[in-house]
Image 1 (cartoon, rainbow, N blue to C red):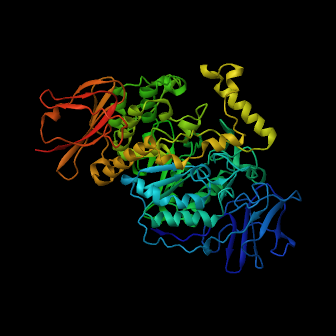
Image 2: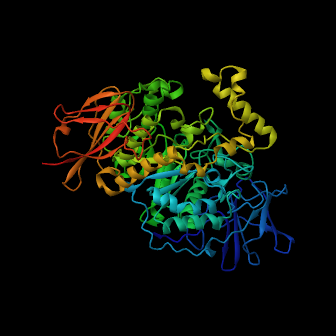
Length: 632
């Protein structure tokens, strides 16, 4: 992958003659740079307004930016800015906060790292199998280095990309990452910037892409100095669940758009990332003619060859997000499509509260989701009280990212319990088989591949006053659920501020050797090996998939041959037992490639019986078969 050379707009950037410091402070009358040298001396420099055009790259510099070049400054020094004589504050575009988000920033030279990934071809979106992980909870070390040590395991598992939950620095020692406030700085809780670069470089060497989850729709509640230094970053014109919205269309929005775009390009350029997943794009409110997300995607796509990928988390099922700009779309490479998860969860676990009220949880809904990529295409939503979704008829199916677990769908449950903690092992195997043979892009959440016993609970480490508000807010949120409606029941909720909530959420790698976990891991590996080997089991460029319900509990879908040899059929019964009609099995040439009831995957195998005379398959319990059906 080749990257277009660029000069960052914001932050402290070492260059030939020292360090160039730039700060966006549009309402400041005076800006002073406070610099602590390696010897410990503090030097103060007056910072003048920046020129309108970057004389090195020719890029326009937004209004309200201040700039100075300090020839004697070097990488490793600490610095902060004083606005109009007030207390020095960290740089909102700092590349590292070694003492936390409240401390002074550190000058980092991104050019000092030696990369060895020049031959890396980038991520083929049709071959993408994404593995979502939280750096702090994934490895025993809870660091970038710890995740790097697990890359051979992930490659052997069969995934093709890892998605890091947000790493932008946050207040305290631990956080999911969605409370980041230093958007350019990898969290010091996980290591130094070069440790993240080593992770990406090693991933590319192992044949794995790296996608980063970034949060542009809000800032965390503690340590967010950006709105203090740059008040135009937020606007009162729109509100979101987090308060005032990020300013994308009000006065001063050119600078805030430039700030976020510069951040996205910094991750691609300085860390060689293969793509970004934009959190909650439905909360990026923009009334301009061309939406900010579309502009951002275009900028990221131009940043390297082949273009880095841009995904969105967006529950609205809007085809325009992933349609091409030529068709009036935003040009994104994919969208997290929740319907698959919600249909499966409703079918196998029976959830009925919250957004699950919109789902019947039957094979008809699952077949429609497998056929189109998502279920809601404009039907009324009881949960939202309005129609939801648009028709994805022109959208390649691989642009829908689907899962049976992710950090939200696990961590936003009251106890952080995972789907496999709730349902029987046979139903879990069937659900995994559907996920990993579906025509959409599958996502695994760390640890699901061996059915980890660890939950994924909500955890924070805010200052005590704010922490108490978080705990109380969490309890109020779940009062709407019958199991936690009483004051006494609400106290059973894990305390996000407690060390125990984070400790419980960390993966327990020693479980993998236990027989039950080992069998689930073997199933994931077998399915991913099959998906890798069979091109027609990978993400589909077609806009539909042939899928049909066999009854209320079972579904059949076709993955058509791309080489003229054999179609693949997936027959999955997600609940119950009994026969289903599958006429093609009358053909003696139809072979079973994978059975979730194989002894390698099930402790007490109960293989379904194929009746070739009747054209039926009798399931003794939930399960799934992958069949090869030769043409002709």
